Length: 215
View 1 (cartoon, rainbow, N blue to C red):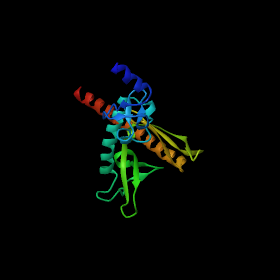
View 2 (cartoon, helix red, strand yellow):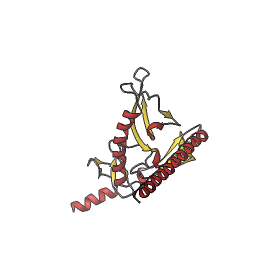
View 3 (cartoon, rainbow, N blue to C red):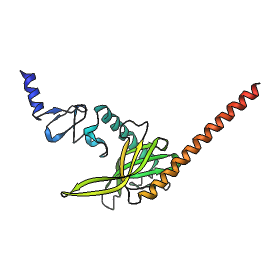
View 4 (cartoon, helix red, strand yellow):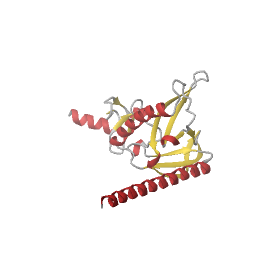
């Protein structure tokens, strides 16, 4: 009888348990994942980036993304921000579009969100995902439609896709200079391909030379 009552309660959207933290959550406190699990909005969903589509994500993907954000925020703080600078970027960090940052010398790309406080306290970065440039698969022009005050607003920018990534592997970045940004990344990708080919060629030559020496 108790089990039947619990099932009816779940079907009516009264209460569920967060699959991550175990909190009791009601209809307005939860989001349902694609695999049928529920997570709480206040804590567990808020740990991730707003770019992740939770209704199309599994619990496994969400957990991987939370780890991705935790590690990415540490990496961003260490390699993109000046130490003790209240959110100021290092000189060798390039900004492209909204919330996208690049360290060419380390071949890193970061998607990071900041919380603007008063001018006195500066800018605080709350969350970040850091990617290897070697895993950048695509960078293509795209648009994003959002509803503001019951009116549709179209944002222009670029959609980035990464391979070999658990968690958030694709996201949209608003960018008023998307043409020049795409050219920038196309050039970086082409340079990476040339470097890989050169390294492969050097390795083959080294192996051949070693074989000849043994004869």
